[in-house]
Length: 199
Length: 199
Image (cartoon, rainbow over all chains, first blue to last red; front, side, top):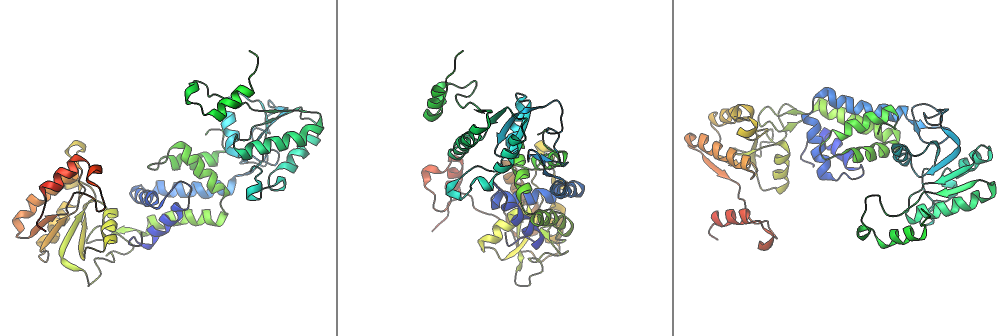
């Protein structure tokens, strides 16, 4: 790397700090940028700065937004009585893609992790309670991941929300659609069995 | 993707055009940038624009340079009688890392590829001949890759340079150092056998 001109080294250094990009990939990306038209490279750089300046967290759900209230929270067609709790903004986008949810969201920006010192005060838990206390919510769908931390967070939330007289649900975890049982890991299959439902 | 704010979509679009980055990775990168400190993101963007503006091709070897003549061509300690011909600037950096070459370079910026319509006029061939005609060069080491195109280019160059009364060599190809014969592909092993040398 040190044999490249200084300005190239800067780009390689920056890129190799990004997740999933090692020094080799960073080098290849820099070489690609050098071959790209000047205008396109400038547009790429501008888009990054632009995004960083414009994107904020929605003041209601803490999802990503160009405005102070995101387009989902601002949409009168969405049902404010159902709140889906997710870990990260990207999870919210995943659920939106399914077209299977018409309520509102609440992004925690993290999960509880005693190991890493992440407690309720480090995620948007207080804000969730605030939204529920304001009264309109009838159901909270917990859609945190199915990692140990995601499950722990789900159990914690279910417990804390039990006193509010609302329904608390958890998205199902089990055999993927189109999946063959023999390719499903035992833990997932175990849970699919435990959470079986009448058909 | 369409569920993200417009400025985030722009960044995802730009990133997913880069080599080796699919839409999923682009999404993850954008999310990472949003979590990064503003200053660092701006520094990343600036480094890209800066590189694009500063880096030029060395007027002698066509390697990457911050100046009109690169630090290798400008170094009086390098031997101008030996010229190593490579495909791309990154190859030059690879060879520099070995500390095994003390001559100068010549970057072709491509390889001959009749299939893709790349002829000698599309690579820095004319410039290579120009450098040899100017007289100082005694040996040309052809270090193009060992793909079909790399080999074709090597044979073409060897032929064209045969009339100049200089030595034309090709870097060896064969078993990697530390490599076990049973992990080497037959073609490589065949070539290692054909180009065997006295010890």
